[in-house]
Each structure stands twice: as structure tokens, then as C-alpha cells.
Image (tube, rainbow over all chains, first blue to last red):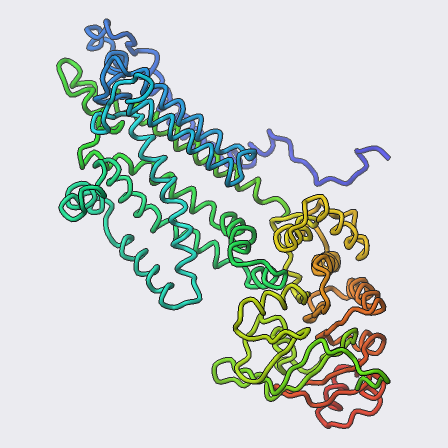
Length: 359
Length: 252
């Protein structure tokens, strides 16, 4: 028996499918051609602006007026401000290395080999410790650089990672608490979640940065950056908890009963039966929340931190560069895109992987 | 009625058990005993409380009045007692309730490693032994979603057996299955019965009841209406409600 004898659905050739969907009637032909022309023209305009008619080197900035394309000189000249903010110039290598460490930690934690509580915890503790020592200094002969001088990409990554690392476990606790069988506990967690969900992020950040120092005793205050991160993490957790709770609600009650009759205790049922299924159920929403959070890190500008967007504004804020804000924003947009798009793709990969055995 | 010369060791005793779902009185003064090694089939119309009865035995449901004693341990709010009983009582569900994110083998080894504290190797050996017993060892690396209903239910039985239960409860184990898959599950249950497992089965498989049951119990509206040996139960039912029920399920 040859393979060809196995019955397969009839295949339509590619050219015929194109013809059927794009050129079936004269009107279709017309619309297809108009759209094709339009999109090609837009793409040509962008490519021409960004690559063909653009100026690349910082020294060539005077040519920019005649060139008519993008003036990437501003990036060449000012990229250090975008990436490092107010971080001392001669220590930029530390910030670069710190970013690299954080990105490697992100990527490593996406690899299934690391997916045990022990390995993930070890990875993130090591990642954070290295990042912190590099950025803050004070050890191994590195000079001390306090968090108010951190900035740029390193600060954005640090805030995102710290918010995720604090917020994610907190969100699981909140979701489980809200589903508690004890009405008092469930109500309390519900109230907590709804309280923080009904406040704008800005209010929470302001409160954390400005008001808490008047309320909290000195030893509990910590640096402004850490207070802002904790506030942000609670906000993140309140939203993420609802996503995870939705995933928990979708699990049939028989799953928990099966665990009960096998003699598993509460923690074993939660970690082995409920959470793995809840994550699979709520993955699109959970990834969505991470994406939103990555972009919302830009809001910390308001309370005086120079994350990448604010650093970008500083980059074109002086001298001859003030006219080149479009180039700077496109550049920062591209950086955001790389991170957020990777995050979305990773989410899609996880969905495929976790769909195993579910048809 | 178990009519044997030696007094049996009692596995389950329920005395004057009452249970309500809100105002609905689902179990009314249930007095019920299962001897060690006995096979009891519980039948009755939908909503008669038969599932609730066996779910009370492993504390998936709370009872509000009366006492339940399982293998000499009183089933009350004492968590240590509940854990003790759940370790000795296995349950097979209508909807199988396999863990969809784990392979067949992982489903079976989970409680062995976590509750019985076996090493992974030991646990896998035990699991394979019981998967062979339910004649499905070749599917051990598959996920439940890749198996037929009958295969899933056999895995669920193997998963319960791995914990070496003294009593096995079956809650309508074949009701969610396509007709051609019922017999493969019943065959496994018959084999278990022949080995002397103590079993309480809620089922409408009357052929199974005739073949393996020591006693058949008929429940209606939260009460045990009639109980007898399978022969007497099917040939000479005394209660009108039993007669009506039997005529309804046996008329085909």
C-alpha cells in the first residue's frame, strides 16, 4: 500500500485559491488592485523615510534638512540617554550588563527545563541579585548608584520584572483566597481585589511615592522606587487574580473531588491539580495582563522616574535635536515592540504546548 | 441480606444518617451496613439520594445527623479521621475525573508519591501493575483526552487501586459511556469483585448486580426502601415502588 492510496481531502492549488478569493469578479479585481497599490505605496513611503533617504551618523546631522528622510543621527548621538537615563556615563557598561542579565533571565524562565519551583526561584533570585549588584553597586568595588539615578531600559525592565515577580504569587494567593469556602476570608479577599481594581494606577503610584512616607514608620518605607513597585504589584495582582480565578472557575468540581478521594491535601490539590489547569484556561488573559503591564511601566514617569519613554523625551529635549522627536519615538516604539511581541509569541507557544492531550 | 455463618467484620456502618441540601431532605434516617468483602449494589430512580449516600462515605458530602463509621473510624469533623478514611476508601466517578494535564501514568503515580511517599520508580512500578490489571498498560504515556471513555474509566479504576483501598465506591461508573464500552469496564469490576474487594456500586447495570452483588439496595426519595439478595430482589420484590422501578428499567 503506497501513501498516495490514503484518502486525503482534495487540495486546491494556491493560484486557484488566490483567484477565487481575490479576483473572482471585476469588482474584486478592482478592489484588490486599489488595496495592493495603497499598501505598497505606504510601505514604500516608510522604507524610503526610514532607510533610503535617511541619515545615520551623528556627525551628518546638518545634512538632515535636505535629506527628507529620517534623521537617525539623533539615535546615534543620544542613544545612551535613551538606554541609561541619568545613570553615570562611565558606569553605563554596568547598566548594559544588567539589562542583558535580565533579558537572559526572562528567556531562561521561558524554557520548560526551568519549570520547577526550585529552579525558577533560583533563577530569579540569581538574576535579580546580579541585576541589583550591577545597578546599585557597593560590592566588588563597584561605586554605589542609588535608584533615583537609574533610568532608561534598565529601569523599565527592572520595574516590569519586579512587578511580575511580586505580583504573580500575590495574584495566586488573592485568587485562591477569593474562592475560599470560609465566607469571611472570601469576602475580605474580594474586597481587597475590588478596592485596588477600582483605583486608577496613577493614584496608587502617587500614594506609594508621596503619601506613604507620611504614614509608614521610617524602617518600613524603603526607597521610593521600591514603594512604587509594591504599589504597582498590588495593582497588577488585583487584575491578574481575576484572570486566574476565571481559570479556576472553569475547572469541573470533579477534579478536586478526585484529588480529595486520593487523599491529597489542600496544597497538593492546588499546586498539582487546580493551578496547572487554571493557567491553561486563563493563559490568553494572563499574558494580556503582562503585555499591558510592560507598557504601563511608562506611567512611573509621573512620580519622577526616567524609564525608557521619559529618557527618550530627554534625548530630544536639547539643542539641535528638538526637531527629531519622531525618530526617537519610532525607535522607542521599536524597542517596546520587540519585548511585547516576544511576550505575545511566547504566550502563543505556551498555548500550543499546554493544549497537549486536549484535542 | 448477608446470610453467612460467621459474623462479618463491618466495613461501613451508617446509623440514622440524615442530610439536607438547604431545605431538601436528601437522606432520611439511613441505616446501612457493609461487611468486609461484601459487594453492595445501590439502585433507584434519579434524585433518590443514592449518589449522595456513597459520597457521604468518603466525606465528599457532609451529613447533618446520625453517625457514619468507616473501617472503625468515626467520620466526623476531625480532619485526621477524614484523612485516615480517604486514604482507605477509593472512589470511581461517573465522569472519570482523570487529571487532563497529566499522562495516564502520572494520574496513577500522583497520589502514590505525594500521599504514600513512594519513590517515583516504585510508584511507576505499582501504577504499571494496576494498568496491566485493567488491561491498558500500552496507553500509559497518553493523555486522558486521547483515550475513549471506556479506557478512561479503566484508568480511573487503576488510579484508585494504586492507593490499595480497602473499600471501593463506584458512582454510576458506566452511565457516561457509549454502550459498546460498558462491558470492558464491567469486566474489570467483576474481576475486582472476584478478588474479594469490598465494593459499593451505584449502578443501573442489573446484569452486573445479578452476577456479583451480595446484596441489592433500592432507594427512593432519600430512603432505603428495600434490600435483598439479587435473586430475591429481582424475582420477588415486595415493595410497590421497587416493582415499578424494576418494570421501568427492565422492560427493554
